[in-house]
Length: 137
Image (cartoon, rainbow, N blue to C red; front, top):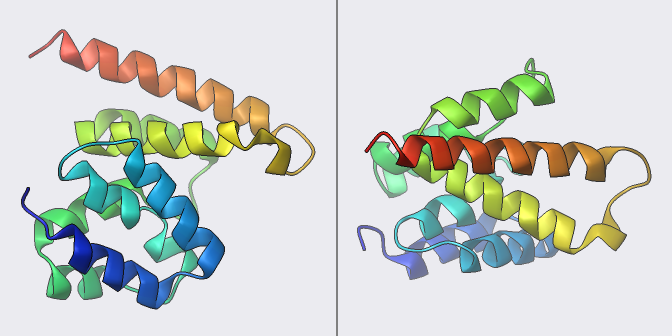
């Protein structure tokens, strides 16, 4: 494994609140290898004061890039965000799938409304994308 997961976990622990940290660890449990580092940091930019420069400084530009791929830009619609992930890296797709599965697994904690439906559609789209990409290797 390229990244020392203990170091990634410690970095995340310093930045996340307890609930977000627990979610990040659950997402990491759903993936393998270096995807675990991306999974642990998948909400770090959106939900904390950490920056891409912090990630690059602590780890490297490859991990910074993967976190950037999976971070939603404030001006993006959710649909455009999911479509962008589908054309980025395999790691970003795998981690976002794990993230969505974790959210949907705790569906009783989802806010009322269409969020669960939106997550289910995104999950199906990304599973199709990763399956399609696998046919091109």
